[in-house]
Picture 1 (cartoon, helix red, strand yellow):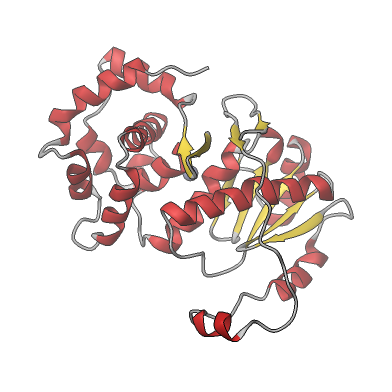
Picture 2: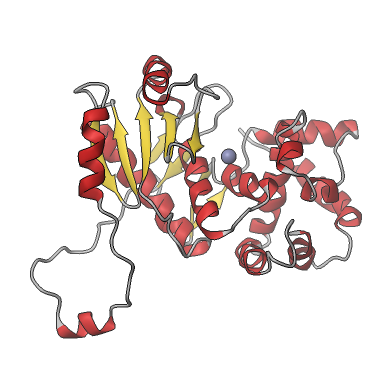
Length: 303
Ligand SMILES: [Zn+2]
């Protein structure tokens, strides 16, 4: 079931989510003996109460509401109802599905998700709260500030994209940028298929198809070997698109989750993920396979 579409502005696509399913029935009182004995030992629960208490004096105005949505705290000035809606329909939904398929571990600290209601609020409050100008019109994940900082008027796509990053950091140490951004951007336009998060074709297709048509696309082996500086360098737009549509191909073949687990489990011997990718594609040489992938990319269309 799909009910909610958050339409992005400018180049940002929408991300649609189903209605939240009812949560578990909450009961009070001591757990039963059976439940207690089956419980696996867990690290101490993060202290959301203290975190929120420390956050309150930092709120720029009374217009900001705070909603706890573990492992995040969602803060926004679009009204409490709106903040709660994002927390429950987008953050909770994405976290549940991403954890289920890709990330066994939560981030090891509470992270803030700031949802600024419009561009004016975003630009003003980013400066006031974080002492810098926004680095993108949409939003970004700041590991330094322990925060996802969003202009939520541009839609929920960037929010899901950015939620991926702290989960990657918690589960794949020194994850190569092509994988980190490939997975993040895959889910910046997504829905739910058969209980799984599912990336959809989006605006990044255009530049990729153009580069294929022009014959200017680099070899996939070069993408996979990029350092972070190279990935985010002058051809970053094309790098994002290549990584995204490579992972989309794996998703469409039903191989993405296996690939991700294989890559995450073999990082020490395979720091770029190149060997895991060859296994997922069942090829010895990704560059010789690349023309097949490019032909498939050229068949894709988006609205
Ligand atoms: Zn990203």
